[in-house]
Image (cartoon, rainbow, N blue to C red):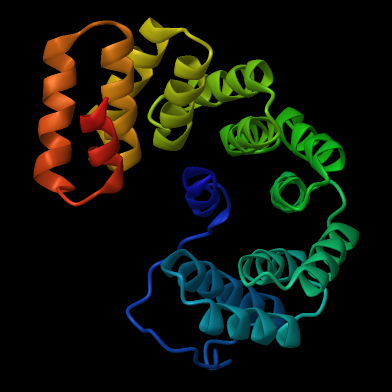
Length: 252
């Protein structure tokens, strides 16, 4: 579940670049109108959200809404921040407002759908995310397929999760979150060769975290591959010498 939660940032965070770390007003010196200021504040909110600075992020969304109360993506971003803060009532209100202003926008549908999935409303959430994935105007449909896959994983539907995650990497082969989760799902379903392939693709793109290394050990043991097992165990001992996961593996 830690991987599922961490993956949320990859699915929903909107990132822009800024060198500042504090919220600040956007002036109208360049002749920008309220919509433009709202766009800038929303982009800043996405940057702070991706950094985990939720206090500044929520303030930026409020500034965006002040500048343009009809800008749907300010409410969408606000919903994401409030969701992370576990303020579910206000988060739902923000997502509903975003959906009211942009009823068919795939980004709003995907994010609201993910919120609903995490709050045990998977059927409605999956319906929204599937609408997003099917929208030919969506520039990043792999995000919706990734969300769908994670939602199915959360609800124990491994076959549906695998199908959705495969769709995500067909669109974007370097999507590391989808690759890791595919490795995990394939291992759980006993498809060890597929799991090995996805895990190797993942490790070529990212430094494996402890969960990926533990999966590597389990996968190697399932295939009686002592060389791979020793390699993953050595990495665990070097990088995570005090981890309880390592102690558990050494007992087996």
